[in-house]
Length: 451
Image 1 (tube, rainbow, N blue to C red):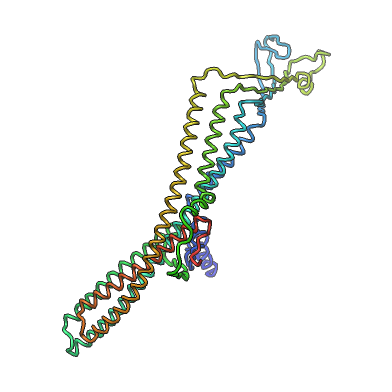
Image 2 (spheres, rainbow, N blue to C red; image 1 turned 60 degrees about the vertical axis):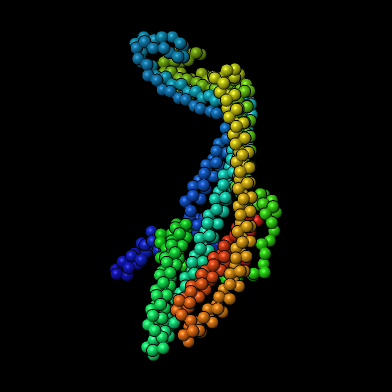
């Protein structure tokens, strides 16, 4: 019994989804896939796409003829009309039935139905492209949040390493102070430097925790507790260059980016809206059809009034059907048709502006990404040289400090400058990585930090 209870206790949290899926190391690709599978906005856009699918299917079904059936059962008392003879009866109870079916078929209405089908087809394509665009935006945001964790982790490691060096220096300074070779002020200044670095380390750790929180929230996870990311091997060749140019990438991206294609589809949709609105000026030709029959319990059989007139016989004998055509010619409808045509033309113009704006925004994004990538690469190259020089300078300063040739103020200044240079190099590295991945993404290359 106890084993069963323990099994139930262990099973319930898992069945409710309370065991956190983040109890593993997440790669960038896994983060992107999980975000796309669980993002609420994406799920809503999927529903919107399904709605457009239903709308398209319904517009096709609207070409079919309509058919509706009716059935009645009536009781008449006193003076009543016998529908079989169309004569009135006195003081007689009558039960009667009637059955009727009618429908219509649209033969011509200015091709509005056909243009509506084409419009809905392009509207569905636009919705699918909007879904892909949303996935791309989320992928880039996930990549940025992922790289922010890598940057903050690197800054925490760098600052912690510097703090350990300072703590070692405190130990050496304390020994020299106890031996009487250094004044207590030197020890106090080093300890103050350590306290400052500890505060900086805490601030950076807080930033790292926040970056983890941001990513887990984007993934719709319950908590960042236990969440870890896979640290990829990232290296930058300082001899590399940002390939291609803005114009080439923009030309390539125009044919790939879903937001551009979606704007083009929506322009086509607005053009079909104009065709539909113009079609309302045309006459409408439709065909109507009907079939009906009836029954009365007092009806007399025409061939033999003394014989019972059965239900099935009445239904068959009273059967009637017909077909007809109707033509509706629009003449004056409060100027509504002309207003709809005018508004449709304005929508076309607005859709053209939207497409133009999407292209300009794409060009600006590519242009900015190129400029940022080039600047980040230059900054990274300069920072690497600066770090090498600062490390050598710091080692020399540290050696002089150990023998009392440099004051704690000069030592701390050199150490702070080295840490600042290392931080600048890390920031430039991840800025360059992200911007180059953005450019690759515009070229249709999937996000991958290992490439």
